[in-house]
Length: 145
Image (cartoon, rainbow, N blue to C red; front, side, top):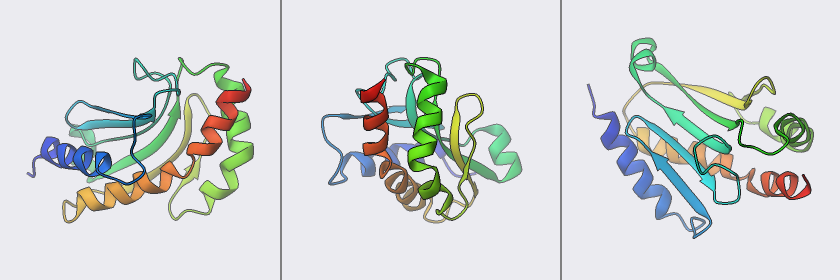
């Protein structure tokens, strides 16, 4: 079994070295679980708006794992944020291969990827780079609440 924590450490390093990663971006990495978010996304306690992935026991067993966007309980006006965000960005997200929008609870969108450790860090980096395109929409909606 490959070292998932090592994969996530390397992913964190690649994210922080990305040309777009600046002072406003934060990473929460607790080993087999990682969130990427901006400082103004109310995610200080990992309960605001963030992009997330994790590879833990159930994902290893199923040989697949999610990459997703959440707006959890710390997001101001959470139901309104989710509704307005999906109205703004839902069509774009649905145009991305494998992504499904949700809007129920705190889930905004998700893609399930097969668990294959070959080039896993690069594949995750590619997905986070895709999700990062939603940055302006998140900022716009949060700024209007």
